[in-house]
Amino acid sequence: MQTNSACSGASVTAKNVSAPVRPSVLPRCLAASDAHAVRLLCSSSKQQQQPCSLRHRRTACVCSAASARAVHSVAIQTETLQTVNVSLGDRSYPIYIGRGLLNRSDLLQQHILGKKVLVVTNETVAPLYLERQTIKAGGKHDVEVVSLPDGEQYKSLEVLQQVWDKALQSRLDRNSTFIALGGGVIGDMCGFAAAAYQRGVHFIQVPTTVMATVDSSVGGKTGVNHPLGKNMIGAFYQPQCVLIDTDTLNTLPDRELASGISEIIKYGLIRDAPLFQWLEQNMDRLLQRDAEAWTYAIQQSCLNKAAVVAADEREGGVRATLNLGHTFGHAIETGQGYGGFTASHSVDRGTVMAADMSHRLGWIDQELLDRTRHLLERAKLPIAPPQAMTKQKFKDLMAVDKKVLDGALRLILLRGPLGNCTFTANFDSDALEATLDFFCKG
Image (cartoon, rainbow, N blue to C red; front, side, top):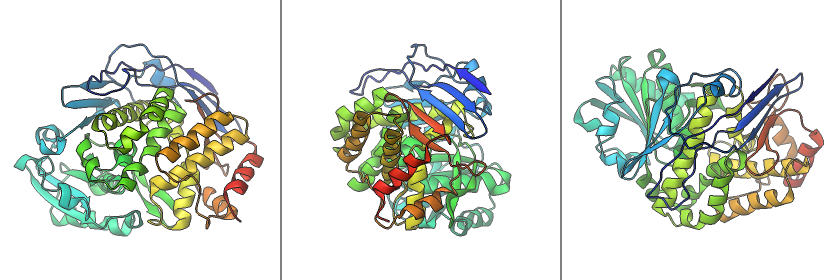
């Protein structure tokens, strides 16, 4: 089967951000499947500047029916607030982006449909933001709180049980709302808890880390880890809204601030060449915590993520390309023990390994490989796996990756000019061997 589709985005106005005004990007997609692979080729396309709203249902295969309706993603901006819409028909929701949003109670009120609220947070974030007006739901709701231990090593069913215990003890009903206040771990766990509690209650994402704001809070992936694999137990479950207060990034240590930048770089590599070029020109501003630069980077990341999720909510095709570097990176994270390496720092390393393999296959040139390495290095991110990761350990852990299908390992790799990628199992295994040999000591 083969499906051709062309998808265009809408214009974006960003007067308060020092960056060129440009449209969101939804790639032209070519999907094909055979006995060996499901292959997706994605490339950036020129956009028509025509604002519109998104109304789209999930499709079973890459862009097909989605593009027949012309999928769009649009950022709506007021003086202090920008809104990106994730278009999923009657499950569509807004992403609010701006400074000081945690001090406003009005934004979330329209998304809290019942009387009772359960805030899920962790020991690090709670002292910083729990008493903000937004989290207290404006004093109009009964608010309960459960604070979990902080760290990837606690992203387990055993720890998640505390959320369900608190919900039951507080007699939360099906019209209750769970609010995830924290980074990617809290967002994933709270979302899964909401999906499972009484077979589904409302939930809201309030991310406080870079990785969570630009990636994990958007799109409805929720879940917990298993000792044998990362994020193996979970569900697709969309939030009512996502609220991103960019001021929360000011409380992050430098290392944590930088750790999520690889996810922004990813969008540039796989589908948004102008964003990659902007990052090359503005990386120093991000590291210096320039508020306008961060607002722009977050907005563009959310536009990219929203467009992909609207086209392929349940990762049947194009959404899988958002996992560039994840197969290598998750092997590192699992191999070193959850908590030993952050998810983002593992993906940093995995991104370089994926780019290296792409070059060995002859799918990208040396210049793009060098630019990828250099940009990650400028962001002060690690680009090599730990010495304890042997070639065999990589192979064993990659064999149980979620993207393995019928025993075949599928990878997201770069292919063609900047902004293009492929999702495939149809590659020369010698290139994978060579990449593992290059990065591994044993």
